[in-house]
Image 1 (cartoon, rainbow, N blue to C red):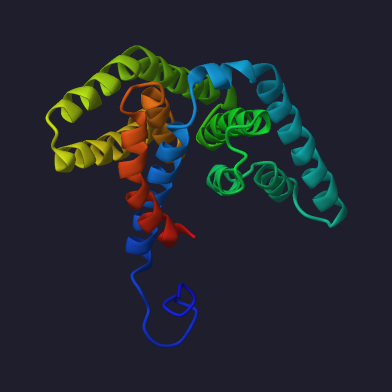
Image 2: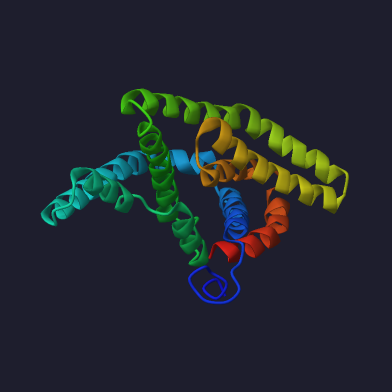
Length: 235
């Protein structure tokens, strides 16, 4: 269906920009749902593997890409761009695959999630570094990302579960579902706009803040239809 309404086939052409925006909403709800299955304790347990592993893997893959493309006669700039590109995994694709195969809550799944979070942060630093001194922008980006995590830990872990508990007490399913949408989308876009981290990471951390609350299962069940509908556009 995407090929048929795309700009590269004759006939009707869909609004690509609108479709991409809807697909981003699907990514937000997908990552929000994944976060509901994790706790910060799970991620902290795999830090000794995920942090050095991701950095070493990205470095070696980037160097391999640079070396190969230099043999092809590419410019150094193009070689670096390709090397960095192939060193990064798609957070959404990999997590969706882990979830579909029931591997998300295994030790390998936890390591993969931690690994991807490190890659996301490094990716943001690299992209920001293209706008100035890599060291200065990198430190500034790390500071912003770190501040976002602290806010989610100190404020989100207390306020968001409390909010859902209060909404659940009203016994209004419509209000509860609306709150899910506001928290998932609001956190993701705030993370992207104000802290420079990806939508996916922001939505994931929003889900993590609710994962150990008493309403997490209800949140997951009510968020599932949103995720499936919008994720179809992303696929």
